[in-house]
Amino acid sequence: MKGDFRVDLAFDRKHLWHPYTSMAAPLPTYPVVGARGVHLELEGGRRLVDGMSSWWCAIHGYGHPNLERAIRAQLDRMPHVMFGGLTHEPAVELARLLIRITPQPLKRVFFCDSGSVSVEVAIKMALQYFRALGQGRRTRLLAVRGGYHGDTFGAMSVCDPETGMHHLFEDMLPEQLFAPVPSCAFDTPWDPASTAELEALMEAYAEELAAVVLEPIVQGAGGMRFYHPRYLARVRELCDAHGVLLIADEIATGFGRSGKLFACEHAEVVPDVLCLGKALTGGTMTLAATLTTAEVADGISRGPGGGAFMHGPTFMANPLACAVARASVTTLLDSDWRGRVRTIEAQLTEELEPCRQLPGVADVRVLGAIGVVEMRKPVDVAAAQTRFVARGVWIRPFGKLVYLMPPYVIGSGELSQLTAAVVDLAESAI
Ligand SMILES: *Cc1c(COP(=O)(O)O)cnc(C)c1O
Image 1 (tube, rainbow, N blue to C red):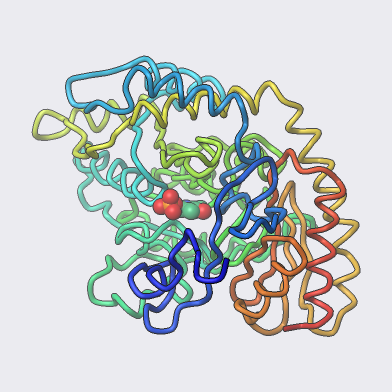
Image 2 (image 1 turned 180 degrees about the horizontal axis):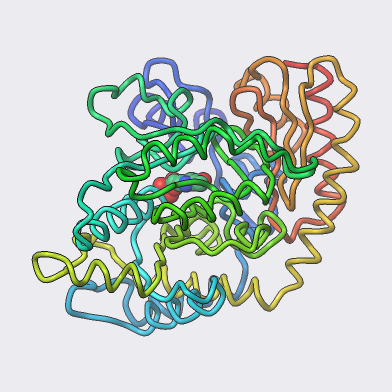
């Protein structure tokens, strides 16, 4: 079989960019030929238990019949038509469903093609809203350090200024305001001092601020931290006090990952704008949504130039993606996802706990179906990958973080395979 690869790895290495890698010295990539249930199948037949859910997305695992059926049925009708001047059932019914399951005031929906774009749309909504209200001075955003919101320019401007690679684009990015990392952890006693700097910033810049942008409760790719619900509740109060919009980026946390359907529910907070993506289609296709209130939408609509909201991607509300999203959300709601996530949380807590005693480990934390082991030093990703693949698991650390966010359908034996591999890596402290 040597030389008979169906995936041309040499071509891949020479010509294809992978996420956040150098073309000159890329990390090794593994050829995948299929995915079923919680397994990825590599060329050559090796099967790996997927600990990443393809970056938060594949909450039902791979090849779920409901999702495949929805894609096939929609493919027979039409995979895509433009959304300018046309509409279709998959978009209308998905919007109806999202309006039903998100907080009651969120009733206006903008569909777009990726998480980053949904953040751009959210930012644009906030800016257009204040312009329409005659408060054109409100052009700045306040974000928190340790956040991640995507890789396009507007989204990048609210990512953590250090890990978010601001230094590469310093003179091109709008200058936003940053509060410190929310320091009060999810499961520690509430420390009101943790919002002090944020409060001072909001006070000082109240007249210039359009919106606060943050990931509710779980900071994902910016550090995998879980912060206290009272922090989020306080942000909501401050936004109200200063007439500032709250944009909640639930692209990673949406659809049950944190133990609530949406992480805002931990604090019973309702944002003015909500970004959804990733697990929206159950990991099958790219789709995102930005939801807002009638108040914000009506405000924008009273604005100059006829009040049009100025965004409209080519693949807006792609019917194939909307159809499978509806199937995914329905499948989730019909399942005992709360029980599944709680069971995963308990097992992650128990099986990752031994890492805490290890000299190379700085912290262990679990929330919902997310388990994180933070090392003291950055992990050698290539070496860790090799080790994980040899053990039959797919886990991809970044920086000092080794973390798991498995599909909710994972069995306890498969989850133990993942946690054992993490413990093994933490012991060797690669
Ligand atoms: C992944 C992610 C994004 C960006 O989504 P893309 O689909 O990769 O553009 C934005 N915000 C959060 C919280 C994310 O996890």
